[in-house]
Image 1 (cartoon, rainbow, N blue to C red):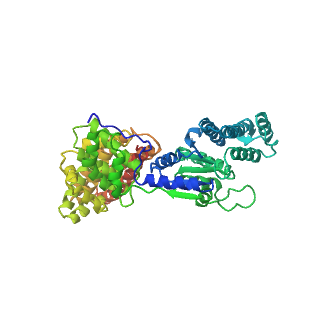
Image 2 (cartoon, helix red, strand yellow; image 1 turned 90 degrees about the vertical axis):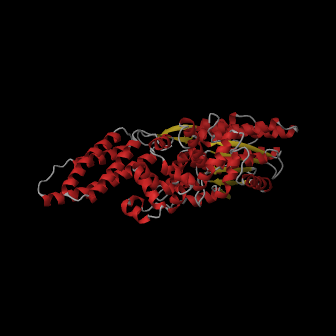
Length: 538
């Protein structure tokens, strides 16, 4: 296992999953259509947007009439005005293209266009000025006079002195582009990537900057983005009441804004079960060793088939799953690999998280319930462990496979769970808190079944000790969610410390009231613990 490697989160050089056909189709659209439009490649985090965009770029690379440039928005997020680095990236691309041309007029035309882009960028930078805003704040504004002066400082003054900076600069840019390529031939394709990594306001600023190019013939934008993130940013900025003065203007819906920006929308599909082998082909040798490739196909592949739901799965999520497995194989080589994969699958599937949560807190309860269910005793499972009543049937089908049954035969799941959680959560004390929570839930179930008040008082005393242990583990945690969790556990301890009442009738009433309150608190503790785990997951 020493040759097992982590899969890097890089775009695939030889993409599978139909990406090559997608790339050819988009490259054809870009070459054959009038170049004044934008393509939106939509998908959530890790869906393969960059991989597809790079494939389109490679398809266009051999075309002498196409200039491609890559704008990584996230790298320039701290820029005061994102049109500046975008223009500078355009300048570099035009200069690079000019160096490869043999015809003098093409070289000269590209260099003139590059000079125009540089002047526009310089003018904006010089024109940025600070003006006082609200008390204690300042805002960036464009100073028209400084922009005009900066524009006139540059060479190649085919354009007259601008009264409107944007009109003058982009008209000059259009004229320069037209000089080095004939009508409808020039294609400058700007790939905009990493919008997902930008803050919503920065992502929106990139889209606003793009709109300045839409009146220029010759530009095509190919933008990868999570449309839900951008739609939220749009509605936050332009939603109800965004107008200044008078009645609130009609809100701008994010979906309508996106439709106006992108004439060609395309949403990437997730990986389906039928595409798993193709996906494994895309990450096989030389990215991984032959031994690791064999392990992925022979041992991991059956588990992946259960990880992928009918809705499909995100490619990056599969890589994260495989990397977590690789890390555990290297750090804990003595663990049963199939048990590790079973636990990972339970944890990774969103619709199985309730079951995994029960497993974290009550290992023996979970495995006993699964055994009974596999033996056909479903009613006993629901009666004894209500928390497992809603577990999907698909889990029992999975754990009924030969690989899945191995999980039920392990003497102790503790080292496995610690191993899985080491690749998942950054919160100290989490595993111990879940274990204490499970013990508390078990004590409450025993409380309901206790025959005498004396037994119930004893169970309450035991629960107090276990609550104190939970309190100790929670104090190690940090964050706002941990503070709320700590307050609930402290309340549970406080209620458990109430003195015993001697009257039997009063005692039963007091115990039953305490039982209901303790049950509600435990449910709240469990919910907070789960949210804390999710918020600190990797």
